[in-house]
Picture 1 (cartoon, rainbow, N blue to C red):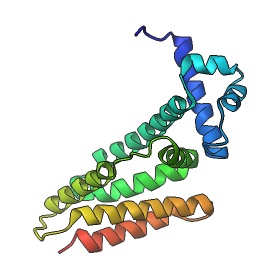
Picture 2 (picture 1 turned 180 degrees about the vertical axis):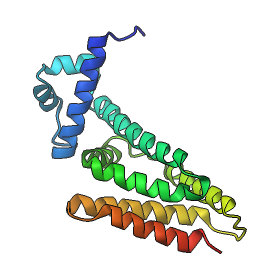
Picture 3 (picture 1 turned 90 degrees about the vertical axis):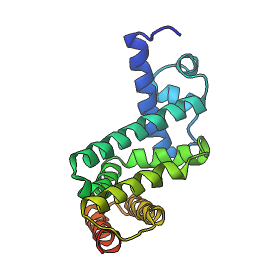
Picture 4 (picture 1 turned 135 degrees about the vertical axis):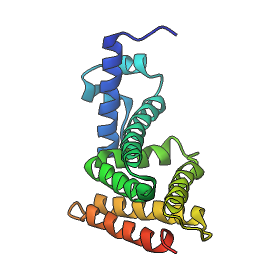
Length: 190
């Protein structure tokens, strides 16, 4: 496979950005290649030059927003001490998705319409590892079902983000603080 030129890479980036905007605004079914091409100011054939199908383009857009989310959350967790990893995770997830609501909608649309084989274990195991590390850093020895705890935490994050999509005035930072306090009481103390 030949290396893409600067112009080709810039066009692909533009198409990904346009796709995120359109899918977030109109949903996957209403976002056609023709609509993407029109919004990008190019022909449908030009879109197909860069991506072989609508699904391939939506998958690229999904990967783009997911990478941004994982990078933000990873940076926050890495900057926190192990004892603070779960709190950093919650605050970074909620914060990123609050600041980037179109990313939230893109992720949902792609998961429902293009990549339905999402592996739940990938998400909960990362949170479970954070809980295990936080408990160890605090010297806590009791047995905790970290899988269930991680699922509850993920559900809490999802609920906060979902509520913010329906009510833009919802205070997600305060909600994240409440979730962090619940995590502290339920799983990070003996």
